[in-house]
Image 1 (cartoon, rainbow, N blue to C red):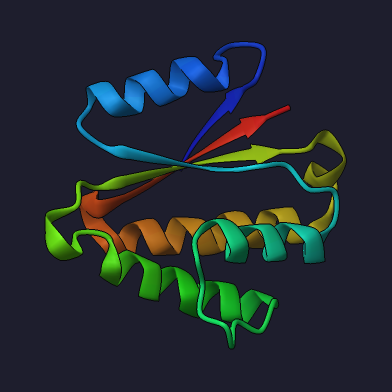
Image 2 (cartoon, rainbow, N blue to C red):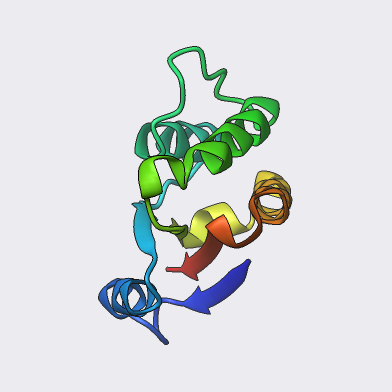
Length: 118
């Protein structure tokens, strides 16, 4: 997982870099609470209707998402997670980062995550 400051790279610049590398980008917009972050990941990544909006469900759903990335010949994905400053001080921020890193390891080169600190 890579981490950048929004002051260093704009979202548009990161999306251009992702596209130049032959990857799709998926932008997860900022949210200020654990529940809102989990809901946003579920909405943006199209998690199943039964997604439980908790940390275990995020882990399981990210693995399912990773399994579906290259279906039908689609290119690898880079998730650009915009992290609100307020959320970075939450305990859940570190746990979600660990879950995202685990999903990256599971997916190999099919999934990359970049956190963009706002």
